[in-house]
Image 1 (cartoon, rainbow, N blue to C red):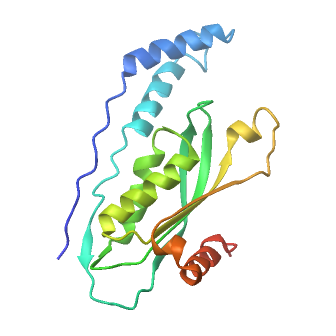
Image 2: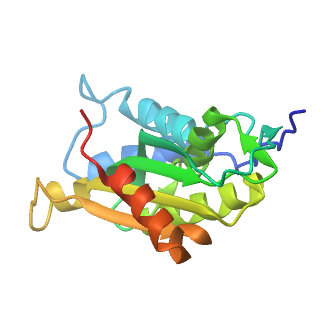
Length: 197
């Protein structure tokens, strides 16, 4: 039997104000918001912010009864997502692996991806996303045995400052046995961090 948890609501974006502020930003940057190519930019920027921040992730918590007692884990790896750095308002790209040890139920696989999307569509930090996804999946799956690994490329590092194009940031959050059981932790980490083919 499947159960569902509704997705959380987000506060709406004030699109008219975003349009107005984008126009002001263009002026402050020495641009002419009336020139061809920029005339419709404030509207497009406001539409993008609305789409990105108010994205409905869909149903988050579909779970199915699970009777196996083998104690093995489920892993999704290579999940790709974009978010925005709250320090510079620049994008960062994540490749994420999520693993958990099912107890009385298993989550629908797409729900792991949807849970990630809930946390990436906003002004964020990679560390916060990693921890929040692990904690929310632990609640939904009814187990503390959850691990999340995220590898990020941050445009605030590659486009500005040190301009370090090849640098990747790796974060992890390991809960329950994925932190306390060395053998299980090693198996999960080896698969989560293995190069993709």
